[in-house]
Length: 118
Image (tube, rainbow, N blue to C red; front, top):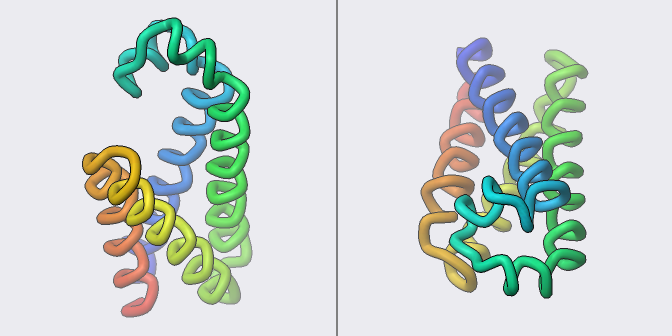
């Protein structure tokens, strides 16, 4: 069970690295425009805000990787950062785009459940 939990945590961390890349570096490029359904004009106007948001996603990934790096001692760290991802996903789904619920919140809830059961 611990191996599955760590695999899910690692995948969530990698997802947040991908989101960081999209928001910080690809926001106004074709991949970023497609991912977030934006026009070039809207992306250009919000580029600085998106980069800031991407940085926060990087911190979430770093925290999850830290928890994995700590091994058996990292359970509390993983729980904390998975809760952060879950809250961010719920807030994003409620305020920005409902698909964030399935991209961010549901995986975080699954990861949290697996870590707590491991």
